[in-house]
Image (cartoon, rainbow, N blue to C red; front, side, top):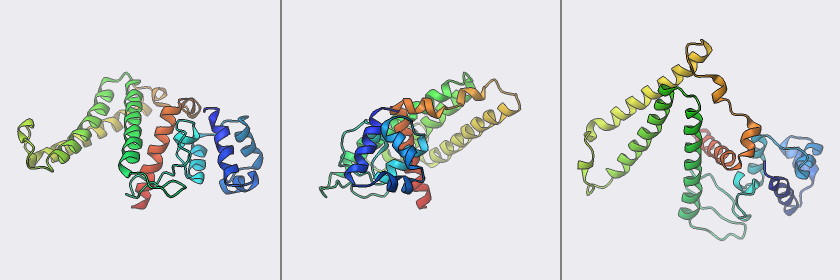
Length: 227
């Protein structure tokens, strides 16, 4: 976790004229522990990082010192609302939304693919990579077909069957991935469970991955719970 974290959470609390006691109560921790976080004596876990980001209505990127845009309050990017700053000046949704979410998608996709690659299991890696590629292909094709002016000759598979076929292969890939993971417990696979273990402390030091993953989890689960 970057040293910026302790400085920033202290700044956020003082800007809001909140006492350590009040913030600690709101976050469900002891005042002593919050004091340690603010002084940099202890590092918090990933779940607390998300919790305090939500509490101060800022991104994990900001708390980790990856952006200095202190006025930006991030709305759920899936709700279609504008992102307003504290002075009530509206920024264009497209600039903030696209930049922020492209970054999250790119970083987390790269991290997930690298994690799968650590397994050294060819079938497992191929299934994970195929899953991502087909998902992207599916969305591209949906957007491409939105305009009747786009040349359909770039595809060799007809529209009538393309989506069903893609969904079928994606489901097959997912089943293959789960089967290989389940076989670990039976010792029938050369995939070691240790290769897929993510140490929270190690991840927290990789601030770029940590922030992106936590934001991805946060926004996706907000979207899921909203449904």
